[in-house]
Length: 159
Image 1 (tube, one colour):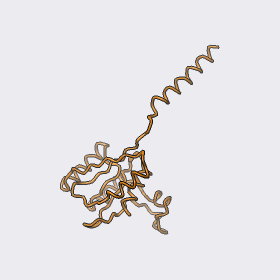
Image 2 (cartoon, helix red, strand yellow):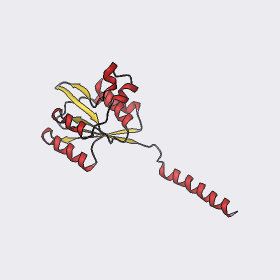
Image 3 (cartoon, helix red, strand yellow):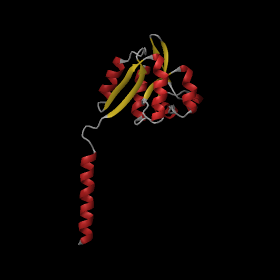
Image 4 (cartoon, helix red, strand yellow):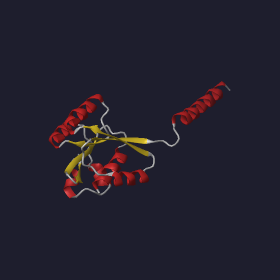
């Protein structure tokens, strides 16, 4: 009898914990890191992404000047609060790869059939986004909370 009571209390506790800890309408927040002068014109793409992913919220950090962006991004990585998807300065691209700060996108590229032949098997760390002022590189942090969802966002920027 006592074992049944303990078991019943455990089951009740688990159910209570599940109701308490699983929020209704769970939002997945993706942080986008870019500088204020960034030429990414993606308002239409962001609107499409929000329509297709209603449980995803986007937070942009675009109040940093281009001159301060490299230092801001490096500090974010050191503190462990880097953006999920971010503009990668061309001159620092190799450094971020060597530090393991960028996620290898090749598995996601293959899954979405965006890879091409032998290059699809090689590590792939950034997508080139065409803008009116030239190309920018964007990558996903190796510590991104929602890598597949973040990749979906990054992929919309490429269109």
